[in-house]
Image (cartoon, rainbow, N blue to C red; front, side, top):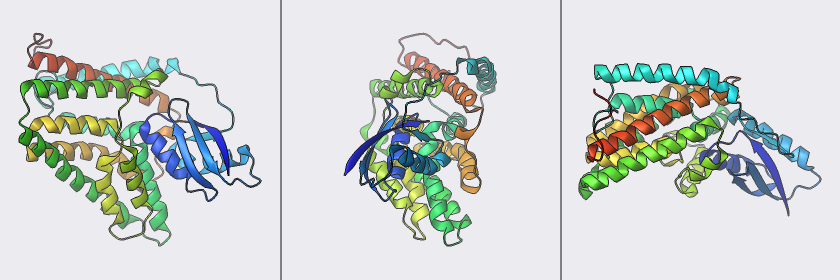
Length: 339
């Protein structure tokens, strides 16, 4: 038994550590894998025989390339690509202006009201589906594709996965909403939760910019064992497996999902909570469907840096508006926007 530490390029969030560890442990000679988001490394334990570190890095890269990661023996110089902001800032501003116009028309509501509407939940879902935090869900889809493709069954498992995901998000979102009702959240408790939602989204946005490495440490995540169980289910070959995996994605470490789960707790309603999470899941559906039935991957695109910075700026905007709105609702400040 030996220990080997390699560098992983392309890691952005806690979902990345979960996915890289799971894929690494599929190599027959690796018994344990531990990824480190702060240092962008993975420590492997196993019987490497005569394999050199370079050979192990090549094999692991072959498994992780579909997910947007590259493994190497040496640390690569990390480029923050500040030039991407020349495109990202105008694109984000255009989105923000369009969003405020929809706000004015009453189609979405985040700035002036006390709740997030279904339109806003859908938009956040779209952003989440294209962010690196969805890498682990894309990994589940790819894993199932490989497992069931061996038997020539590709379409049905993917459909079951998406149906299970939508049903799971509605039912479990409803349960969280009902819990909020049972606890009868006070105004102060609702304010604290709204504040937490804003802070979580702010951290997510900063991480998407990929220029402040220290922010990765601040990103909250669910316990890893939940995600590991979901990944383990994906490796099984059973008719209902894709459906169960779709439901299990509700518990994966995606910060966007967690921020929406916190919001559903404030609704105090099974129906409102369920519909909010359902619409959020519908927002993620188009991109996940592309991953299911094609080789689509935003992480492998040459414009990935521009996109993630644009998405980061938009998420930061959502976070700031949510924080401002929380302070308005509690009465600490006067309304900032006249809508």
